[in-house]
Image 1 (spheres, rainbow, N blue to C red):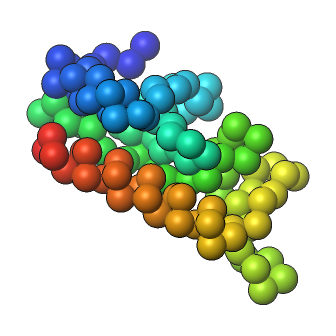
Image 2 (tube, rainbow, N blue to C red):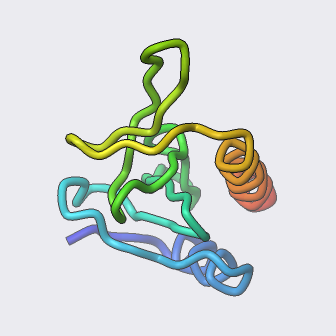
Length: 109
């Protein structure tokens, strides 16, 4: 079980108040998942009561964390054998998500 300080719990509560959903990604039990819209990120508790990004925020494919790959001259969000094209709209959503999450993390650092 992941142990968190009162400050880390307060940060998660602030994220939830701003529309982020706290989720569990079973393969990443040492991290806390946050999701908003079609995007998600993993956060890791750090000393001093803060949280940091465990990995780069990503677009969800079938509800799962994806990786971005380049294939056939296009970029794709891929999870296992499923893929979604990294359209300008999807990339913009991911950029907004990452910027908002980073701002929230910096505000509590």
